[in-house]
Amino acid sequence: MTRPDSILDLLDDAEHHKVMASARIDILRAMVYGNMSMPVLEESCLRRVLSVPKTTSNPNLHLKALSMMADALQEQGKYSECIPMAMQGMNLAKKLNNRVVEYSLLSTLAMASFRLEQYQDGYEYLQQIIESGSKSDDVRVLSHVSYAYGMLINQLVSDTRYEEALKAVYARRDLLERMQDMPGPPSGYIDQQKAYLYSKMANLYLSMGKTAQAEEAYRAFMQTEEAKRVESGYTILPYLQKAGRHKDVLDRIRELHTLWQGCDTVNMQYRLLLEYEAKSEGALGNYRRMAELNRYALALTDSIYMRKLNSRAQEFATIFKVNEKEKQLQEEQAKSERSSLMLIGSVVVLVLLATLVIMVYLNLRRMKRRNRIAARQIEELLAQREEFRRCLTCNDMQKDVPPMEKKAGQEEKTGGTSNQSYETFLRMEQLIMEQQLFLQPRFGRDELLRTTGIHKNDLSCLLKRYAGVPNLNSYLNRLRVEYSVKLIKEKRNFSIEAIAEEAGFNSRSTFYRAFYKQYGMTPTEYIDTL
Image 1 (cartoon, rainbow, N blue to C red):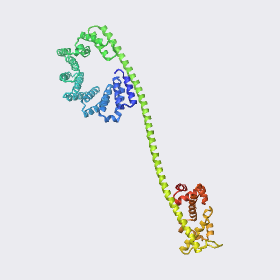
Image 2: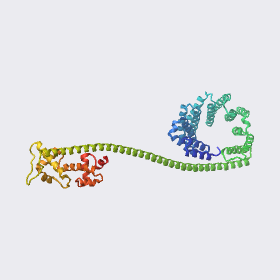
Image 3: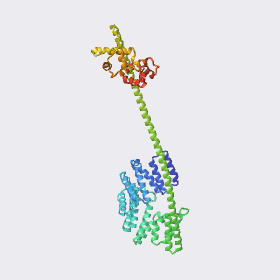
Image 4: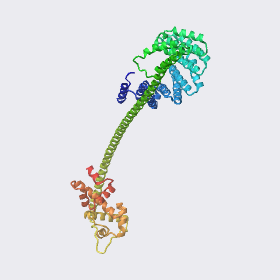
């Protein structure tokens, strides 16, 4: 990966335009940061992936994220965090029957356990790979078994368990022989693994004091094609130096120096090469050269340390930049969410307003329909009353009944039969209507008693029995309202206030209350029905 910054910019652009799921973009970012040896940023990206609910719904993506996270944590030395993450990934790999990833995570678990000095657990994890994977016919699975053997051999040697290590070496050799007859391994892979194995075997025999077997393993190493490559010097140098073959060591190192010409030598591999060279020069008595190489190795160590510091500073600067970018993205996301909420709120308000308008419209329609029906009923009722009063007047004229008059000091008593009291009420109403006494705002009980001659004790009874009202004021208001209906129909250019005043009401509000009480609608609503 030669231009990681350009790849990161492309991923940012893809995220901005939403051409790819954010989880997949973060997986790719983690791969780039891993290649740049920035495990902190790699971990940050992977934690975002694992925090997304959609990740768990995609088992393969979830498994990849868990596997990469375990590696990132191990690289940072966070072994206690690495183990549960790798365990979770291993269990998921088992469910998906992905043995390659399962064995890779078992190797990670073994390495983390060894680093935490939990040696028994580490050996058990490696043994799981070897026992389960050795039965497979898949070269990819067997390559993980071979790698597990390599880890096992190194740890056994470190624990000075040479006999067990030697058994593991021969078991790995048998595995490589078996893989050699299978299709699939890359060209040169088996030969390279055998060369590495023979170098380990030679070194192991030498540690056990078996020089003849060590020399035989060295000859087996030299017969491989890998031994002819200059790079193989790194593999065999430990044996050559331990065997005291310092001239061979220096010959190999001179060849290896040719690989570093024009290359960056500020790294641990080149430093290790200088250490081998210095030790062999000292063993041959070239102490000045040894001291020179040791000074060079020490200076190189300082340079490597400074480079690590600079790399760490660069990583922190990148982390700061990424955090700022994430903060900006979060702000943009929050702004987008607010806009979405405002849009949703606006739509909801519009829907509610539309619903309200529709409800008001339907209610107005129902009200208008009801008012029209009520208006017809009012007109019919008034027409019936007008006809009744007209008939009553005609009957009185035919019978030659004198109108109701009051002589000075006289009051008509109505304590007779119900027919007599009804006739008294009708004559009182006829007099009020003919003289339009109800139109006088100050017309009241005393004026009515003086005009009609009805006894004051009988008036309330007549009104309750024949008019259905509790008092004279209610009765007069009813007559005024009936009259106002006539005025509304005849004088449509009159205002409500003019109608109220013409009908004998003292105020518009009194007129409205009386009209609504009698007909269940306001004067304005009645006008709208015309």
